[in-house]
Image (cartoon, rainbow, N blue to C red; front, side, top):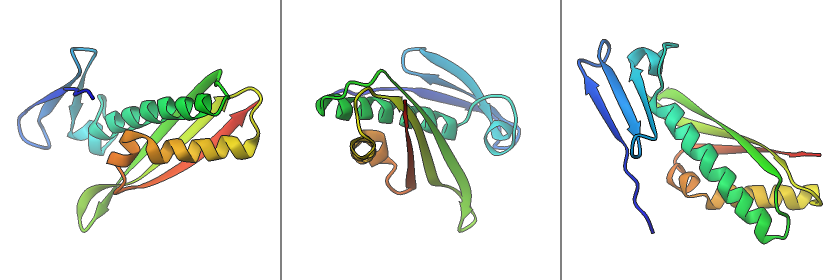
Length: 142
C-alpha cells in the first residue's frame, strides 16, 4: 500500500500561538490557531482536516461499493461534521456525522442504504476513527 505525509508547524504558546499546516506536497497550506480551533476564528483546525479526509474517503468507498454492485454513481457529495466535546475535562472527538447525497441511476433505496453502511464500515478513515460514534445519513437523489 502507500504512505502519505503532511506536516504542521506551531509557533508560540497554546492560546496566543499560530500554526501552519501543509497537506501532502504543498497541495494545501493553511493557518490554524487556538481561536480557529476552539472558537470561531479564521483558519482551519485539525477537526476540519479530519472531516475533509473522512468525507473524501467515504465518498470513494461508497462509489466503489455502488460500482461493484453494478450501480455506477453519477455523483456523491459527502459532508462530515466532527464534534469536539469535553470528556473527563479534555477535548475529545466524540462523534462524526457523515451526510451524503448521491445520484445513482437505477438503484433501489434498500440497496443504496446497504451499500452506504458497508462503505462506512470499510472506509479506512472510518476504521481509524472507530473510537468515535460515526453516524451516517445517506440520501438518494432522484
